Image (cartoon, rainbow, N blue to C red; front, side):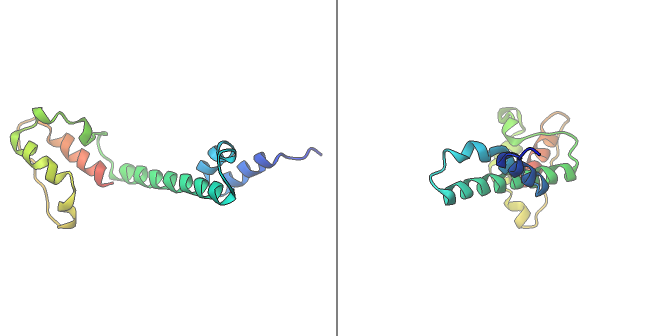
Length: 124
């Protein structure tokens, strides 16, 4: 019977425990870490970041936005003056903590939907 390599066994265990980031990165980090504590910290940090990314992605999917629109993609100069002035404040998302609503009004094609989806994705 052939002995299984430790790295293969680690990948199997990571798969079983759903630790994809650790499985994908442990061999690469093995040589760069200063000591075991540093190695473990780096692996767990990667896994934590990956879990955060999965949570955000899950929230975006659950929101069922009609498309992916981001605030960074807005051409601010083309927005109506009211949205241009309000954008720095509303993009902080403080209105959510304050329990306030936003209403976008204007002609078609002026960026209302893009802005609303962008705020929603940022909130996720």
